[in-house]
Amino acid sequence: MTYSNSQNLQDKSQVQEEEITMNLEKINQFKQEIDRKMIDAIYQSKIFDFFVSKGLEGKAVKVKVVLDLSEIRNTDIIQDKELRDSLRGIPSQEMTITSCWPCNGGQWCS
Figure 1 (cartoon, rainbow, N blue to C red):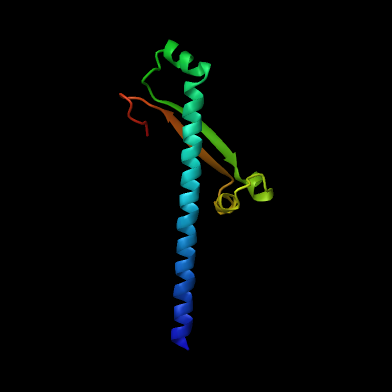
Figure 2: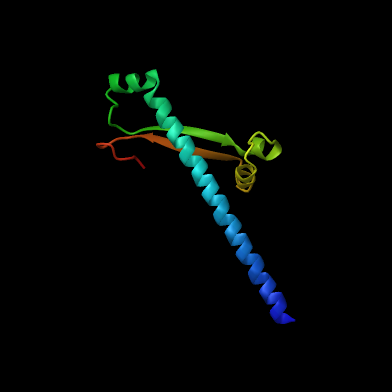
């Protein structure tokens, strides 16, 4: 009987690890999508010309997107259930995604 309980705990632990991995993958994919959209927005807007006019071309420019996770937890505004559940699992109230404008010869800023 001890083996059975021990096996159940191991199985449950493995399932939780797989769920966490899936959640992290979904969140990282979401972050990458936001990053691409923000970079596109910079290049397709007048802000790009502004950066160039101020000598910021090729310099580190960071744009932050802050998601209100409490709003996501309390509503179904995100249609993708897996992503919504993954974001709901983040313990903080906000999630900040920083997009960087390429600098140093096209290398990404950190």
